[in-house]
Length: 328
Ligand SMILES: [Zn+2]
Image (tube, rainbow, N blue to C red):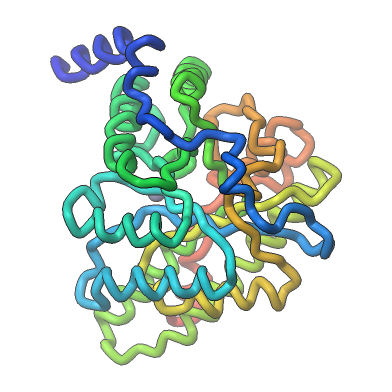
């Protein structure tokens, strides 16, 4: 109780004046500086476009592979496609010297280094505005050293507040700090498929990776098609999409095949900075509980797509029966 009261007080007193002093010098805000303007500037191919956004870089990979190897594999897969991704950093997973090495590799490769809060709190009933705000500010210190740090915030679990007051107060804080929301448009449960892969390896060390890879690719393409069509129906145009994936063992092994599968299915990979320039990312859906994919939330707000919207938009409960049935 004491701690909460203190934090609440700290946030109330950390008003605009104090906060702007805390803003790291040179923090990249939109629009991007000229030097960072992405090379792909218009959609001439008429193919739907998407950018890779990767959450929760971590040093904890168990015995499957070392984080260094996972990191190089993921970075190589992205650079082989000639695009820049956005990395959403949850500070507690990388807050030491090795974590700094991991983040430096992304920074040097030119990817956006973005805020995903320090402790990955679920911004619902269980988390107050004050606690959530402090946790967001704490993560700024973790990403501050990097040249490509970018003022984009991604809510953990894509949960943006359970009441209008909490939702709007945090949005006001983001604005005050020069941030925009690093929205996901194509939500998915890649984290769960990887977890099943890891569990499968624990039971059977030589379990083949291919069935998990194939499930992941089919799942991601299915979700991409769903959110693309929903976006077309809500906005009447193809928006630039942002795909949510995670820094995890399965992705470390199969990201090249995932990215190629999207191209085969007709998608074009673009830089994350270009995707986030789409005006759709400035929307502030007035839904409650707030959050989910941006497309989901804007569809929900219209009240016209109830039969196509489940809640939550994505979760392990939707994938578990299907993976069980496949013996994965
Ligand atoms: Zn996360």
